[in-house]
Image (cartoon, rainbow over all chains, first blue to last red):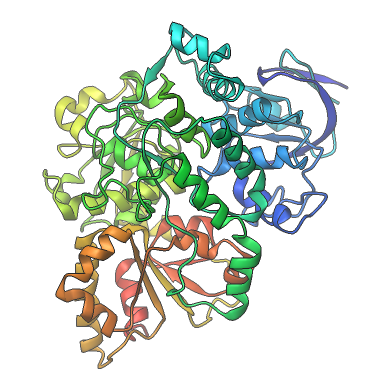
Amino acid sequence: MAKVFKGRAVVAGSCTAPALVSHGGFNTLASFQMAMMFGDKKVKCGDQNNADLYKKPMKGTALCLPQTIGSTTGGMVLYTACATDNQPACMLFSKTIDSLAASGAILAEVWTDASMPVVDELGDEFLDYVKDGMSVTVSPDGTVTVE
Amino acid sequence: MELTREQQDILNGSKGEVMAKVMKSLVMYGETFGADKMVPVTSEYGHTVISFGIGVMKPVYDLYDQLIKAGALSGQKFSADPLPMDKHVPSSLLQDLVFKKFMYSQQSRYEKQLEKLGIISPDAYTCACYLDEVGNKPRKGEVLSWAESSAVVYANSVLGARCNRNSGMLELMGSIVGCVPHFGLLTDDGRRADWIIEVKTTKKPEAQLLGSAVGMKVMEQVPYIKGLDKWLGTELTDEVCAYLKDFGAATASNGAVGLYHIENLTPEAVESGEGLIRENAPVYVIDDAELERVKANYPVVWKDLDAQPKLCFIGCPHLTLSQLKSWTGRICAALDANGAKKVTVPTVMTCAPATLKKFRETPECALLEKAGVVLSYICPLMYMNNPLSGKMPVITCSNKLRTYTTARYYTEDELLAKITGGAK
């Protein structure tokens, strides 16, 4: 049964993708660095401190997370992932987006042709409900449907 | 968001497409966080977190080429984080090859870009840009467009400047257009304390351990810390500022703190006292047992937990002059006590190029080098952030380095024993 969540569209857009869920903070640099360095086409998560995501492919997924954590290089890492077509299909935040993730998403939106809708403030219930592999559909108004 | 006529004109393209995109990036950033307006950057200098020309980040340097080509240069000179390579730091031939040919293949290109964009000087590469000898020390109330979490938290908390926790790239864009969105730590309300921290330890707490505990508890919120003035006093001396530098770096990396207040010590706490604290702020008590609990929970990701350390880094963030002198005394005394002449683990102490120049003029410098310690301006994080270095058993007293790399954390006393042959 589909469940609908309403968030805020930080970068408006639409897509449908399989969910990939991180219950802890998502360390952008640690997650992307190794995959980008070695040209991993699936962009497997390299953050050994993130038990939910470690070694799982991130490219093309609906990345569901509370917030991002870590270095202030996080924004440029996310921008680079988008500029090299290695980004998730969308990023869905249960909390208000943090300044570093917002920066990366905005830089990608303004300076690249990549499409990566970003929705935040979806609530803790969203992160409790969504599981890896569920189908997630994002609408431009920030509506997220999980089934 | 309300824009001035000039800001709106830039957004509409009056200064070209690239400048319009720069302004659009900042406006979108502000709108995401409810900014009401853009405010002028009032500090003399900026600071960028991006000091490395890392191969996989080529799109970043391509974008910077666009800026330079369009004449969208920084309106203020700026410093940058520490450089990622220094030939004086011990490394294997394979590491050298990986660093130069693979990881930092864009380094030369990027340093040339920074010259064009407006870096202060070739010596302006340090995370501790606010030290007197470096010269990028903002005044109270000044608005900054900086990134580098440890520098931002220091500028906000110890100097009373105003800066959000900006991302790399966006901080440079603020320096280019000369304004930043007004939200968060730029506002009076955003600087009020969300938490009360009560320090009830029986001795002066280790700065990097206390900062870690605070950061992990409050995350991105603002703590008001009581009880620390008992150990630090009420004056911002060189030693106290060095303590706060390390404390803040740990709050910012183990959590996401951009501002802290310390009762009777930091400028806004001295001015406004408990009036800074929000109603019903939760209280977190930190005693000896809590610090022990926090330390015991750090994961150690070495494959062999009993491995002999191959390298020790001290100075993340970069050390102050007083810290270099203090470490020299402690290392020499410990070596004497242990009947040793040189450190038993290859040890690198890192500081700003300008600090290093001043330190070289002191008698302590020769003593430290005689003890076998390597002095460097490198960024230990950049050295560690690759698979080869990641497999090395590296030890440190930096909680920031521990957080982002495989380096293993020890308190300063524990580390001193390890590198001087005093550890059991």
